[in-house]
Amino acid sequence: MAKNAKQRRKRPSSVQRLSRQRLIEGLPGPDGTRIRFARPEDSDQFSELLSLANEEIEQAHIDGLAEDRCGQWLLDGLSQGGRAMIEPLVRGAMSGQLQDGALSLSLPMVAEDRDGTVAGALLALPPGTVVQTVRDAGYEQQSLLAMLKYVKIKGLAVAEGARGRGVGGALLKRCAQLYWQLDFMFLYGGFETERALGPYYARHGFTVLNPGATTDVGTALTGRPIGLGAGPGEQLFFRWK
Image 1 (tube, helix red, strand yellow):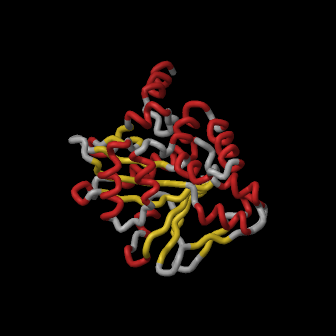
Image 2: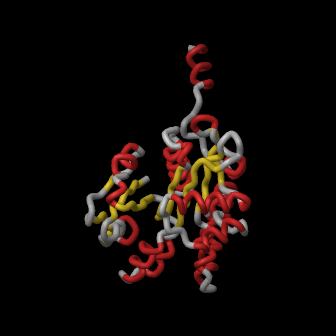
Image 3: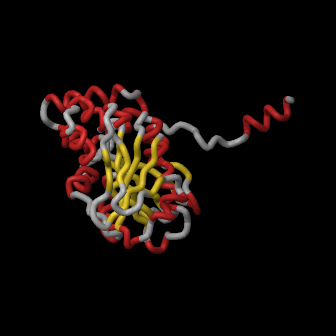
């Protein structure tokens, strides 16, 4: 009995909670990489890598990373709890400064290789389309809540020399872990159909919709169905917590 208890204590936990410090310093990734929150000095490599993957990243997010303004509410949420995100979001809405709030709720994450180079990059952020759709449906308060419940993977890219090492999967895993820990409930993204990325995202636990298909994202938040789908020539992938 004692031996079994000792073995259980030694067994590594795959669901260990993230902390602000662990995310900033970096978590063990595949093949000697470290998965961590992106730093201002990563902004050039971060931008270049996502651009090479043909991801359309708004300059405001690159500038926000360079100025250390991305993800600050997420980091505060890890160390202080959910109110650290709710209160500033409400203040931002009242003062008409939700754009800054979107930056503060975004997640720029990188996989750092042994030599210090960025082997992979991921950007997740509040989904403007979903927020606006909920608002247009007449749910003003719920549209604000959507910024704390729904998140979009805007870009995921792995350097050519680092592909096949599990870097992208590790970034997706840590991204989901962070947002689930902060009580977000829906994670999604899209890709061009011709890139045939459906099997990749399916392997990592996402449901992949056929071109033109939609999924209901409204009932859980408003009690009313609201369809979400990808644009022409694109497919949607998503996960619920």
